[in-house]
Length: 306
View 1 (cartoon, rainbow, N blue to C red):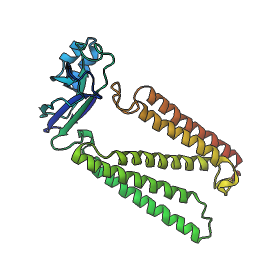
View 2: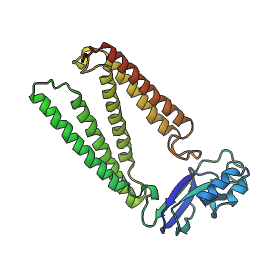
View 3: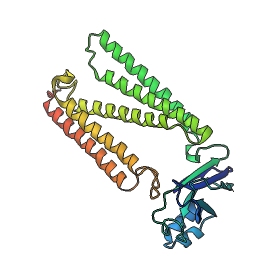
View 4: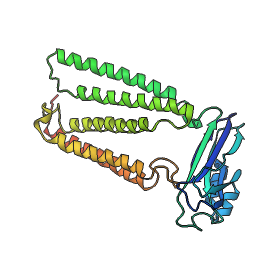
């Protein structure tokens, strides 16, 4: 259901509570909802088991939660682990081996579980510990690339070249990527303090990332179709319409696949399972289109003799 890595010589603190999504038979209390915490070795061993009790029995911590029918949160449960020898990934799973929840009450609302995990004093899992300085470094790199591309674009204009240049679109792509990194770093900074981040920044970050990727892919496909190589005017041919539609549909599909089963219990990482397969097919399709357009453009270009 969830995983979190605790670094070497760090203290891992896990706090969790649960409730029903909406009230259900408020006068009753539903017991025996277990939250099981296990390390990576115990997790791998649990995958070999077929019975629910055998899986749950492998957990380092197995805590019972009393889910109230009035939809209120249960009491916080806390588990602490000190890592001494190595970094370790911890998995938190919900189990109902005794069948006291949806097996017994099929019309019961969904169970909401809130987890707060700390890697020492950090809300970041160990693999994400240095994500903030890395984001700042990437912003500096992109700002340098933007400045260099803008300078080259300015030099082309001074030489009398047309302003309709791939460098103009490239500069805008880099600017979109810088904006994406800025919002992402802002959200990570907020997350480091409260462990949640801000949903609006997450939404804007996803939108800007899709925009920057769409523009960059479109630019590469336009050049492969002959723009600036066999023709100069972007709107001289209808390639930009076809490419724009293909890229928007492809990137829209990627975003939809990422949202479709986000947070599902069967996922070990983003785009696992069939969404990952479709993602590979979409990317392979765009690459195939690039190769086909580039080959057509190469046949139309005049041959150079040495």
